[in-house]
Amino acid sequence: MKEKILFTSESVSEGHPDKVCDQISDAILDACLAEDPDSRVACEVFATTNFVVIGGEITTAAKVDYEKVARDVIRRIGYTSDEIGIDADHCEIKVVMDTQSKDIALGTNNEVGGAGDQGIMFGYATNETEGYMPLPVSIAHHLVRYASELRHDGTFKWARPDMKSQVTVDYTDEKHPRIDTILMSVQHDEDFDEDAFKTFIKNDIMDKVVDKYGLNHDYKVYINPTGRFVIGGPHGDTGLTGRKIIVDTYGGMARHGGGAFSGKDPTKVDRSAAYMARYIAKNIVAAGACDRCEIQLSYAIGIKEPTSIFVETYGTEKTSIDNILHAIKNEFDLTPKGIIDTLDLQRPIYSSTAAYGHFGRKEYPWEALDRVDAIKKYL
Image 1 (cartoon, rainbow, N blue to C red):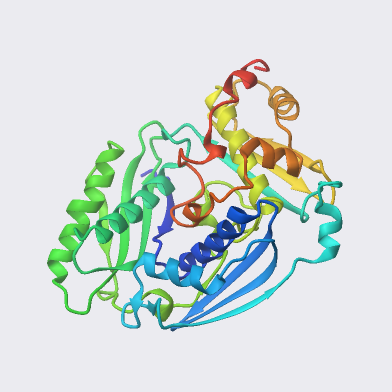
Image 2: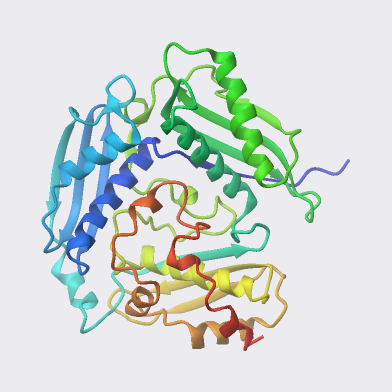
């Protein structure tokens, strides 16, 4: 009997402790950019039981109340008491902030325009979904995002902010993938109707999301497998900025260079070049050059041009890799300034990226399909 070909991706909600930290980091970044587009921000957040640390290096002309920004984010998510996970209004917040290193500034100022660090960044796209994202992570994001929307509007009774999803897709018939398993762990009130809670998750969240993708309903279901999930958020587990990099990107379907996104201004290529690589990969796939595309870019601190460009098409290319590379080199400015200008990144657009993935969402400039015709000239 042939073994199934299974692939699994996960997502987490805005109330996951790591995502709480990501959202605070990016809210601080946005607050700085709103007043000073040239802000240099590297902001990290640590959260545990009723205690938050905001640290990093920020050089900005903006006047930002970091503590207030953090409390506003925690409150918006829904953490308003110790019992739920953290109390937005009464938790202790410690701010430990310095300015950015002058040594780094030597290579990233406007005169030099180099990368803010060395590193490798990956971008990926596939035509298996409308958003050019892998199917497992697309469904996983959709589940927790929809569940969180229903929690906010009061439809999802007993639900608290901390949630996780995990989706296994059966790719045995590559042209007709099926859902094999869906797992959801959802934080809930102490006093709740377990049967009604789980029935709602299956019928009104899982099945409704699956219907959006036109997929099968005969999947295996796991809901709160331990049987209880009352203690959550930063009280249930420590949170840290940048610890959900696979959730933030492609759910493990593509490689990752290791650099996190949240809390970093766009001169830091960990973030901006990863966005550019996604932009390139998506336009290449949409142009029909291949069915799947992964782009790797690498940079050296203080140097403008990437030190390397690599293209992987997994054998799905409809033209030569040389043609694809020519299109990339001729049609995309891959210097840090070129990336920032192309994608208009020096503005406060980052807070919403910090939950439910940075890719596959039409509102972001790196998701635009405005280079398809230019790429087609090389095919």
